[in-house]
Image (cartoon, rainbow, N blue to C red; front, side, top):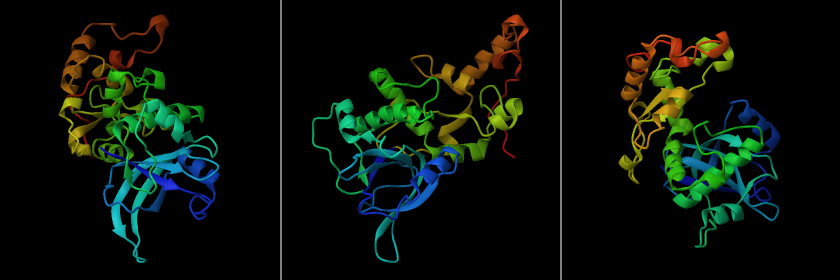
Length: 289
């Protein structure tokens, strides 16, 4: 899945993000910012990752992350545009600097896109993702799951390979289609956060990518229904725990074997049973109404 860079120079474009604080607050509340963006390139397609970089004399860094929702088309004025859905923003002045991205990626070739819609090289994508995760956490949010890499210093080869898969799992466009099809119950153990935590847990679930990294080629296009499944954080962590990723069926069989042993899931001191101890294990993905 390619990632693309889109540029915003606020000194020249005063129309976009007029009320930036409100846009940022709405994104934090789960209301993404949908917008059209001038894009000379025809390459971006729905589902591709989009990063926005603020340019100009005061700042030059990545400040927004989202997804392409519509590929290039001609406006009535004859301008080529793509549609973006931006789901996370950093405060103005706290962008991820381009210089830091280049340094972290150890990128030695010139990289200074002058127009929107440029595909981002994979090493730079990994660098942006790492630094973005740290920056967004500093703004009170977390875009990484508990079992994912949390700091740039941990981006060794194995961690970098895992993030390549996690990019598919965190894609909001694919995630939404997966959940719309399967619901929010865990495909392994059946756990439903809303059923246990009420409104607090509504809509919360990880999305797991079924294909091993070796099966993903450069031209791979994700199918949210065939390639993704909703899965709870515990099962998600366990399914990736071995060097060779387990299948959903293998992990489900393991849980079924364990829950047959009495009290294996009981919490100490009389607390509530763990997810695996008392929850029923489903025989397949959650049913779709």
